[in-house]
Image 1 (cartoon, each protein chain N blue to C red):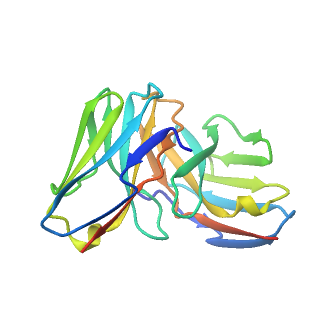
Image 2 (tube, rainbow over the protein chains, first blue to last red):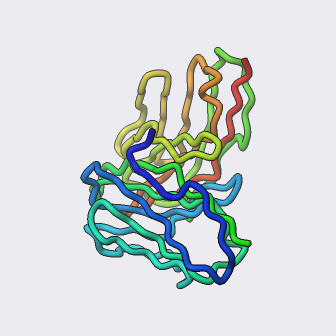
Length: 114
Length: 109
């Protein structure tokens, strides 16, 4: 079991649908992250929230909209996605400490766009 | 963003043997981390080595860091079937992790 919980585990949606991915942690971490991972590739950073404020957006298309309602929750709102957006979406959390940054990952949401 | 290369891309060893994988990175770092990912799962943090450290041990893991060559190695001793996974070296700088391409390790029983 991981300490970062992601829901749902699997999601299939059409290109016109609107859906949200959710991530929750109760470790008191104040930095949270979204990554996208394609098959047999390393994770790619999408967004970083630090103290509930968006601090890094890696030029992600606007069809992905992150939200951090509080220090324990991180959402990723999806709208009008493309087939190439099918991937494993990973959430992670850590303390926003410059020198020591082990991140704790959830098991991800496997997203399929029809 | 992808930071650098890992070598080898894939490794197949017999249970009980040691596994060694190397990575190179491109920019300056605060620290270098290694993560493991089992198929279809999230990543698990294994070990962190700071930029002013040269070697670190944790159980069956040994990590080295050469900042002059911008390279690191991970040694897993006495491998087990449960070590079968993908291993990523990750450079940490400016609050961001940058992943290497990963090494897929298969441990045969």
